Image 1: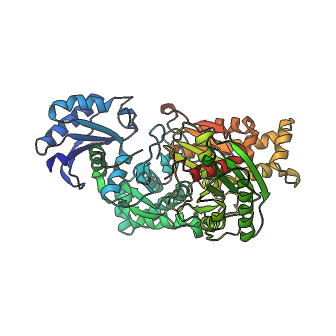
Image 2: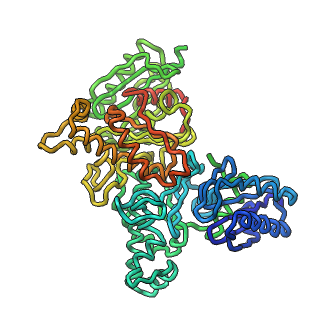
Image 3: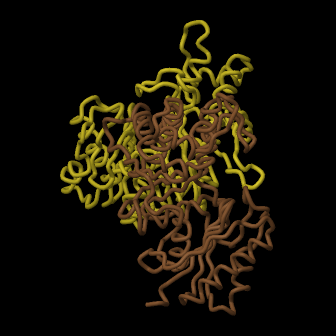
Length: 305
Length: 305
């Protein structure tokens, strides 16, 4: 039935992806546009994308996923790393702008939380209770679920795994701290491993080189996978998940990354003989996961604390 | 009403504490005995303590808290560090032994989880949603609650904070790994800081010396407090709690420990300007917290996932 469709929008640092999603999690139609630089233009682009989608499929629920510090309860983005939002009432602004278009409810969620919801309902985490999502892109982000409920923490900032300390007094991080995990286990770390000649390669170029047999590129994935695994062992000690899903661009390397990750993780597991070790897998839903999860949250299909 | 009383038993490595607890969390009577060495004698001591308590106050619900890997759902202790339990069906054994004494329900829980339940219902975590308990004794243990629900993880092993990596290739740990946090931020770490003359002092002796103005003892608390704070910052990044409660013997040092802890914690907080920083406090209920929480769980008063 068409009234069960919902629209999900994922506002990322480089692009805005808007999708009409049915109740099975299938994307009926999607639109991607480059993320504009000003707050007003971002909002206008979301409104325009939603209106375009509404000309094709009816929907009343809009879910918006955004990178950054999202206050789910007030519908505000308090801080975003890539967009100049500062305590912006995104949810109410969009609800007001789209009221005349038949949108009756708007939900705002952190992008990693939305992606984990989508994976839990329709993807690689179906039927699993205690799940961590670790997104390995330029940096490391994440989300956690316990007994099917998203854990947001008191400021909505739970899941900032990338800024846990990996190396005391280690590499400086964009966040202002030193030795953060994401300086050793991310796309940026991959590029730094390869920076022998001064040139900074992209993750995709390093992946191509590794698949073509380049030993330096393969070593870069080995080092990053190892750092990823050692950090995951800490998260297992603290949270005891049954499944860890790896998402983000670097996860596209598959076993080239996960092989060393799994191996390093197993060397640092506490109580390894007395526990069922968490499964390690990559996400299933790809780049639309955030939009799919936002739509599902808007529809009220994914529970949350 | 007397039927709302419950009995809680905390089986620790050195002593068994059994208490009759009313519905306000008050201990009506308590018994402590040294923990025997064999599985059978531990069980007999619990049965004997409960029977003694039942001669004074009526109760039908028994809650048992135990250190180690407790499977709450099956009522078994799969592994305990200090007692030779190996997959022991403690809950059913006790229910069978005490059926004739009027005990109609038995609940088994990890000791840190039970203590956090007690603090949440009656102690320092009342009215708080996202709470971590970090017990700093010989080692570091812990428990976590989100929206008033205990998070046990998939093996019931969540909260093993002490074995997160603090220093790569650092001090060897009893668990077989290296560089675990508890090697730097525990009672054992405190003793090691003071071990200049080869003699190993207890935490209590070091606390007395520090309070008497001994600079070496004060420095030991400073070092341990600092390591504690740096590790807590990682837990804040991952979990975003509103309150961190410090328990265990070392917490009796109060601000001597918490001063350096708070200071080091604030130096490593991610997004510090955009978040309300977690409160840091010591537990309120003292050594009976595990028994009080076990009684409360048995009575069904503390929710759990």
